Image 1 (cartoon, each protein chain N blue to C red):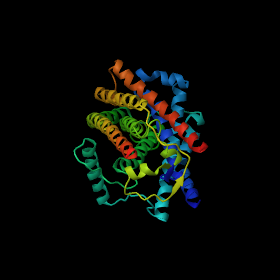
Image 2: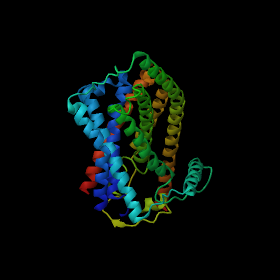
Image 3: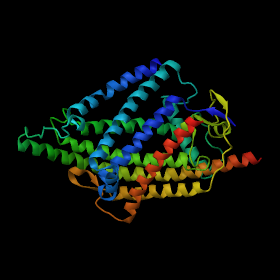
Image 4: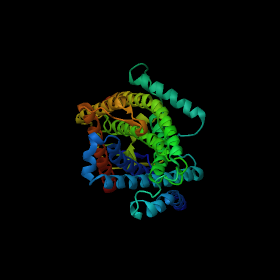
Length: 99
Length: 300
């Protein structure tokens, strides 16, 4: 019981920033889009920041694209192999029961 | 029939909350990245506003579950010890898992006579147990930052798009994880149409002995469960599920860069439509199966 209470308190503390923000600025607070439109940045600095983000995303994409395709293919192959494995296990169990 | 206790009520509750919120996050999240093919999901749920609201509430449930059960299981381990679990954080344990994986695959294809002898959790389950919290944590953090970009992104608003790219990439991987997990544990011979272990907490004793020979269950019970018989329809379910996975692999090959938008699917064809709509259909089926499993276990 004590574990459940401690865990509950930790979980409430962990998500409290989200709930407070939700009440203040999200749908429940009536202002879904923040008033901060980044206009406080001069346009040249804003451009610089967005250019650096484009570079970072291009770099991320160059890693993510082949990685995703490889992992996806690997997971598919492993799933097919696991299906075959379970088929073999089931057949062995069946044979064991018959014996 | 003699059954053994495999999962505690806390483990079952954790699986229920994380899987349900995770699948609903996929159902409501995929239409954002693949809006051309999955627009109908948003329309069905009442528009993009409702869909996104559901997405965020599910994110909140996932974040709560992660914090609650993460703390609970850590405290349980500290106070009760390992129990009948074979999981440790020792490097030797992880090395053994790699060896088990290789031997398991060799046995699967008839290249060795003996299957690896595993404890309560085999190498696939350990990979699942470690992967899920890591993925959830990445998704919760990146999702929270995108939901409330202030004050974290105050100094560099462009970082929003970096977080979105990471969020999308990990989400696509999570789709494969769910498809693989559900196909292997529910649609395979020995489990189809539903593996009740994670819902009732019990598995047949003979199955435990066969699949996890080194595991010494702490509790044994006598139940009125009937002996299992595999229905051949399970092969069709397995093939369909694997085919949709294969088509989703094709979708990942088609993803292309589109500046700040990150990875996007610019090509549209019939196979892509089948892959994405099939994935959503499977997620709906898994959600229904989750409720069915819980209700059946409670009724028992």
